[in-house]
Image 1 (cartoon, each protein chain N blue to C red):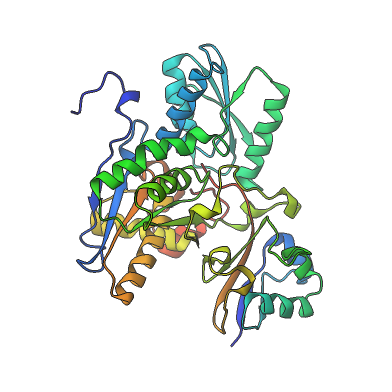
Image 2: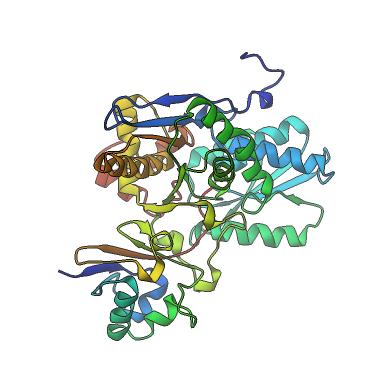
Length: 92
Length: 316
């Protein structure tokens, strides 16, 4: 078992076109580090130099926005589903 | 009193109805705020009327003027109805991938539609509208994503109505688009009943809608203040359609697809409250009726068929 991560179109240049990749870690931050070791450059697109999530990147663990659950410190475990999406305008 | 001098004045005062069949227990109850009971059938009437009246009061808008707005439908339909009553011309910038009913309604109310590319969804509509506004400085862009009157409509209307009807409210769940409903309602609850948890349900569309060329083209509405939310959930089309159908089958409420997404988040909260042994009164927003989405196929066939038909469409 691992943590499944859905990658948006705009970041698939780092994953060889793969829509989903797998990684591991106890926190979202560790998961991102693990993903970056497999797919170099990915972390730089998600996390700023100050170590925060990029303003226009939204990350959801089991559909919940991590900005409300501890951001990069959010706990993750095997079997969780992580979705990365760019922030876009909703329908209105 | 159910008599009004005109349609516009009948805005708000919408019913709050219980969900006896979908509520998990008698201690954890769901309540639906039926915003489809507004003049043009959606919650957007509140924001549209408030934005027009604020612009009139500030002297920015006088009869004969042209209003410009990026919209995927409901706000445009509301603006179009009021604009025609008051002698304004309306131009809506609308993504191509929106339902045919929304276009037909806009045209029926006399609005002019400028299409923006499907790829990039509402981001492109906002960008095109901003470009047009810069070229035509006599046009008035109300700009629902950044106009404080949008949130104010919910601070003054939606939230006080809910608290009056449901003083025991513990959770408020609404859709996240312009963020106006959540921001305005949350501000009111934080002032008048600060223990109310405010939860956002955000529709997750198909990949086309997230088709930005560059992450820096991302967009966060100017109205958004994350400190006014307690949690935020992303809901995909399959869950949204499943809940939309449950709502009509179990409770008789025929709602649009975004309402299904909101109900999905509300039911998730309800389960957690049951598990924790707490009492909860969870109020969620029914944004609009299902009529405008019949052509999307969301109500026919299996869930898989319906959600695959929504791929690439702006269904909320």
